Length: 120
Image 1 (cartoon, rainbow, N blue to C red):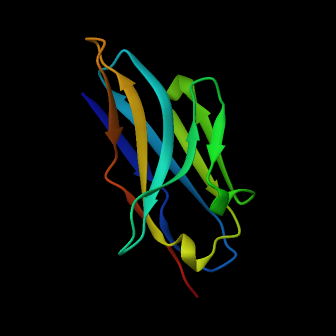
Image 2 (cartoon, rainbow, N blue to C red; image 1 turned 60 degrees about the horizontal axis):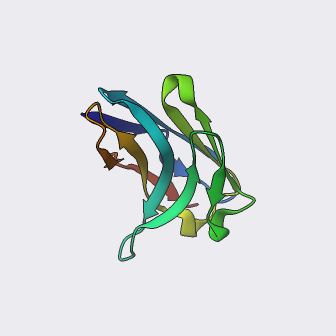
Image 3 (cartoon, rainbow, N blue to C red; image 1 turned 180 degrees about the horizontal axis):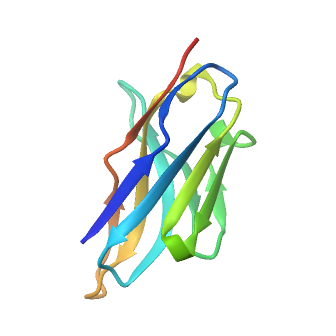
């Protein structure tokens, strides 16, 4: 069983910055790719940033140049540094991870989400 716990959300003014963190805990064989998705009211969940276990990243076009994803494999933790935030970045941000269980099954785990609100 795997738990993903996000932190770091909150209210910030346009142009400001936030840093989200997500840590994976529990019993598992391996954590593969991890990443962030977001969902704004009335919209579908969308990919924000993904990072593989070897550090390769994929950043959504809408956040390219403003958001950076990083990873600490030793701590099973990822970060999302968000700069130059815009009101349209307002959403619930979800952490996700591709997990290999002790029984060698692979599934995608999700966190509960953390609210990011960009408003003056």
